[in-house]
Image (tube, helix red, strand yellow):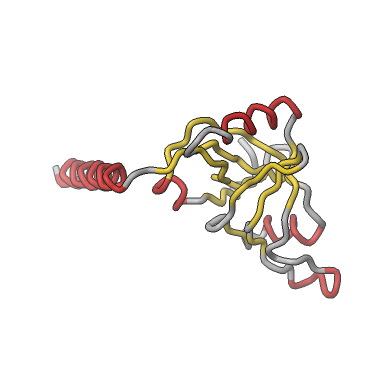
Length: 151
């Protein structure tokens, strides 16, 4: 088990998408960015991934400014390269070429070796009735848990 328990998730993604396949990718970061991530100053709410010129890029991922970095600070919403094998990028490109599939970041975490990793998923958008079913399942589970706790 790792010492660091940093786990920044995109909760909105699981509500809006069905995950088909997940990949774990490294991120190319600057020094002030990794320090800001370790401080927990990041979020994935509006982030998405694209493939351009054989490179996987995450756009819209917010990493807040690190106060101690002074004038060497980074831009909070800049595009960041993701590190995956060429074969994995080809698989992802072929899957996202299908209609209705997209590539979204799901979780940002620090690995056991100390590197920042981003879990991305090939996903398909949910319909509104799928969302209602998920909400119903969650409410039923919550009610059952309450009833078990009362006994």
